Figure 1 (cartoon, rainbow, N blue to C red):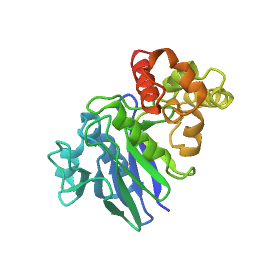
Figure 2 (figure 1 turned 90 degrees about the vertical axis):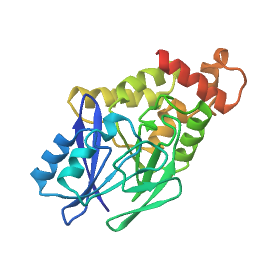
Figure 3 (figure 1 turned 30 degrees about the vertical axis):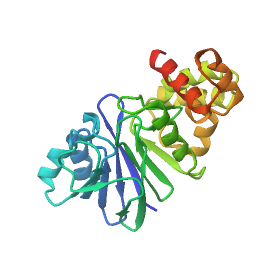
Figure 4 (figure 1 turned 135 degrees about the vertical axis):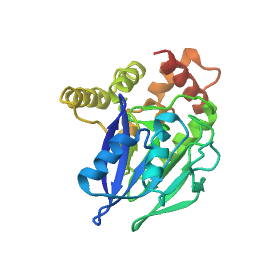
Length: 252
């Protein structure tokens, strides 16, 4: 099993550092080089590679400096996005070897056109596609694309740990409760999250099992969720339910 460290960046980003027992590591979505370099130095890590999920600056801003300091590192990322530093373009269905584990690349377009995620070792690194109790905004893709991307992720095993790129859980839960005010699990989880955040602790990783109970964007087949957006939909399909939820969340 690989070990994961979170490196907080900016206001609410997480840069994930994956390491093995030999002090070799990989970082995911390094929007800022400084905290990554500080963590590597503090733990005497050797940086082997960078994994990128999508091209937004808060996910790739630190890559040029990391490449400058580690000229031989592999920079893995989506082949369909404008990321000039890539050495290893990948797309849906490809595999990436991380130490002794194989990670599969999943195409999860919606937030951006070429957004990808990495899944392996019972861990999912999903950038801004899926958040705890939420999902990414539709900047470049369509609601239909994002719906199918999230369906793909929700098919992963329940025990899959979800390492998303932002600490948005508390605000996402406020929206989720507006959608499903009588969801007991959601109410209980909000209390836990508020305690964690009050003590300065992270709510990530989540698990797929939890998200299927609390995340309205993964619950578009639930009668309670469908009812919540009944006045906002053109038809009763799950895609239309998802689209209505996303529009509502954008204004929430």
